[in-house]
View 1 (cartoon, rainbow, N blue to C red):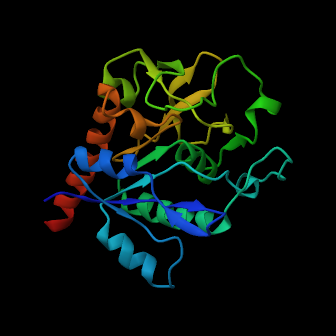
View 2 (view 1 turned 135 degrees about the vertical axis):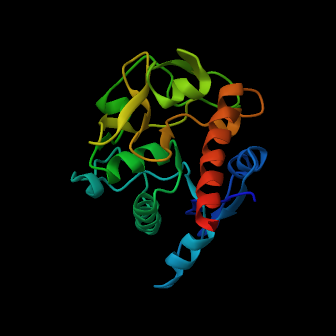
Length: 241
């Protein structure tokens, strides 16, 4: 039975509405999962009911994260935040960790996981850590912006089998201090952590780039989604026993 994957919603501030990029959903479907977009707001008991439906979660890109989560004041250069999204993602992440459900983080997802586990972020890379590496590319996004070095004993290396990966890049925040419990899986040529994992979990991995734009062309991107969905299928099978 295909696992159900809860996908964190994106939010349009101008239209005051939730929305979704098809790549997140399509990549999960291509990998063998059934994606559902989660609501941004729900009643007191609804989170547990939603959690019962899901065998894994994708933490998507989007808004900047409230620096209060990692104990800092918001800088002027920090972008727009969304407290509703921060709260709902914290709730689902805590449930996922408690139940050892697979989690895949993408862009903001990596940053949120790091912040929730006790790490910190650069609120604005151009002002806090300027670099010649392209971290905020222009479209199209299904192409290389820079390369990352994959750490050989990491799960990402186990999935892709490569020491260097070409990645796209569209972010202005990034990991500053890596959270306790996380280990780096890939690093950019300017030294930023571009992927991390918690190896004590069934599957808790996150990347700074956007494999949802690359999976049709890039073998490693679809392999990453398949490894995640396979872990969710394993969880679902154990749940039914």
